[in-house]
Image (cartoon, rainbow, N blue to C red; front, top):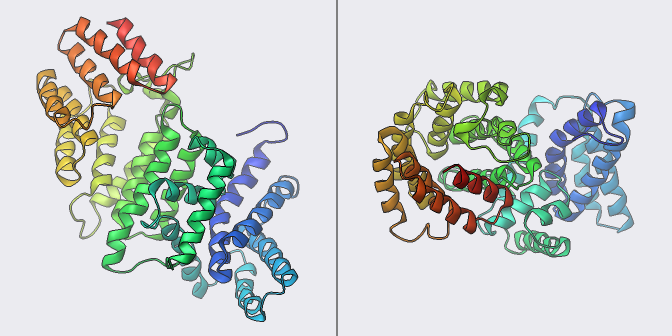
Amino acid sequence: MTGPGRGPAWDAAASAAADAYPRVVATLIRTTGDWTLAEDCAQEALVLALERWPADGVPANPGGWLMTVARNRVLDVLRRASVERRKLADLAVLEPAIASEEPAPGEREDIADDRLRLIFTCCHPALALQTRVALTLRAICAVPTADIARAFLVSESAMTRRLTRAKAKIAQAGIPYRVPAGDALDERLPGVLAVIYVLFTQGYNADGEPAFAQEAIRLARLLARLMPGQSEASALLALLLLQHSRREARRDTEGRLVSLDRQDRSRWDHTAIDEAMAILSDLRHAPRAGPAGPYALQARIAACHAAAPSVEDTDWRRIADCYDQLVRLQPSPVIELNRAVAHGYAHGSAAGLELLAKARAGGALDDYPLAVAAEADLTARAGDRDRAAHLFREAAARTQGESQRRALLDRADEM
């Protein structure tokens, strides 16, 4: 974002600082064992960087610069607090990481592990999901507490207390600051990926905070780079890139939401689409590639939309097949809803309405306005425009977001 006092130089500095920040925080947490001290000192270094770098230029080693400033600040605080000599001695291990633009061969794995430790600690299942998302935003992405609070519709003081309790729980419950191994990693990784996906949807939703979606993509990219053997981590990155590629086309010139079938596809980010397609191609041709996981299946669905020149040319049968696999692998009412819509396009509106009725039978979608909107769309395609208009208005009445409500009312008027 640019504005008064900001421009390309500031953006370049902010990007470099954001990339280096997780490494600095993670290393300081590991070394000091003090989350608050590590975050405070890294934040001070980040503020100083954004003051100086636009004028002085981004240093050759942004991470080393931030580490030097943050480490010196930690030393000042510890000296003033008369902390035991052992912690001061421990901090000396940070100096090798400052010396050169690239870490030494023996240090590269430690630095990567630090960032992974921080991600897995923030996303520990002992914490509530929203707390995991908030802690990830604060500790890894350096998002101000006030911005996080606004996104979660709570006061800044309430969010500060929530984050403080989370850090205290990590300390008091003895939550280990490490990456799990073996079977434990397989059990924990889906939870980490879920946090990143929730963070993305928090920013991608119609009235969400766009910066959160960008942070989620940055985290997914980091995780995929640090865990190249985990196919679902790469698949999640591809999925987020494909979904985010449509952001600019999701609103018209008046700011109204535009549904996928009506978007101007020339406005999609085809650079992001190409990157995602390359990731999916690599996954398909990877040695010993196993069955597709839930994020891989969702990415394949998004890829079908991205590859089609129009909604009529979309491979709906392949999408329906992916949803058939996904609902067996990860059954949920929302996935069943999306499956019904896909079958409605692939095999006719009657088939879609039949599956939708089954998805809604248990009552789990009763308060979900998009279920009503899906029924309205399938009903319109079946030719009953009066009932479709009624259903679109019903969906609008149940929707809290103003952008989505207006879009549904527009569809009702079209009927």
